[in-house]
Length: 173
Ligand code: HEC
Image 1 (tube, rainbow, N blue to C red):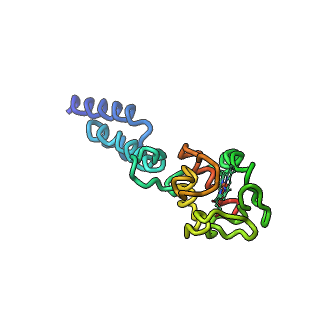
Image 2 (tube, rainbow, N blue to C red):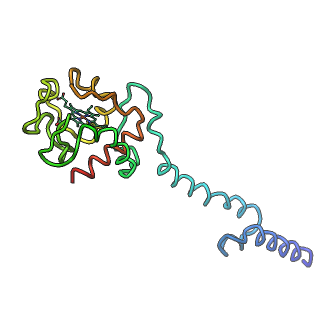
């Protein structure tokens, strides 16, 4: 009887020490059962965090459509990327440079800026400049709109291009 009590006491103390950070309920159980419980909360946390940390859609292979929506974008970084466009485009309504005004470009139909002399390729493309379309177009404009006179090789970096589209979206509000 006396020995049994000692053992129980020791188990309790060991359990309490090992599970100091766990709830009283677990500590009372002591021994192996509680130890098995210990890793569980950590795994649950990891599982919850995992989807949020998925930020490598670039891993999608060739042929798979890369979704703009799957990127975490940074419009401020996109503004910097827009420096490459600024030589030919501004956002002011009615102000055409080498390229047409990009006033409210997101959601607009291609070739719709009055007074700009578009190529037939652009004008007749039937494109509506959604974020996803812009994301694909800006990777390689000449491939997306064969015959376009936009002399721009494209932004190859997917993240940078996604940020750029986010900036275009912000400017179109
Ligand atoms: C060298 C000048 C130049 C640069 C640099 C340039 N563009 Fe253009 N862009 C043009 C021209 C010219 C057109 C008209 C194309 C046509 O008519 O074929 C155009 C057309 C467009 C269109 C279609 C507009 C419409 O009304 O249909 C979009 C969108 C666009 N550019 C976005 C961009 C973005 C974003 C960048 C920077 C990543 C950029 N362009 C860089 C010259 C340029």
